[in-house]
Length: 102
Image 1 (cartoon, rainbow, N blue to C red):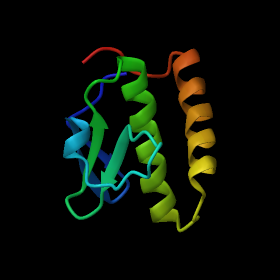
Image 2 (image 1 turned 30 degrees about the vertical axis):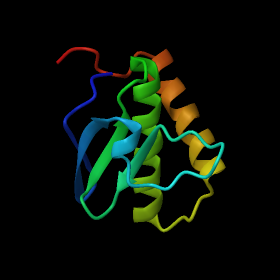
Image 3 (image 1 turned 90 degrees about the vertical axis):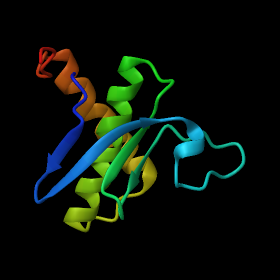
Image 4 (image 1 turned 120 degrees about the vertical axis):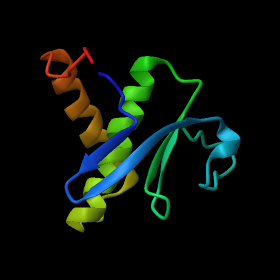
């Protein structure tokens, strides 16, 4: 998957940025590991820059899940978003539905 510099999710456009952990706005509870976030005010998806390509793709899908959940008003839990988006990512990747070329 090519990770774009911005992504359109229905009526919203979000920039996609790679950042060091210190560049994240989200507060992390002790023992948690933050790999990505959606900055709603700035309309930015931030992905931890030290991740592998596969991990970056998974995090992008996860953060898109949060955006879709917000738009749909579903109020899914973190675990529900994680599992749903992991399954969707697996389907897209294993069936070669992700565009690998620019």
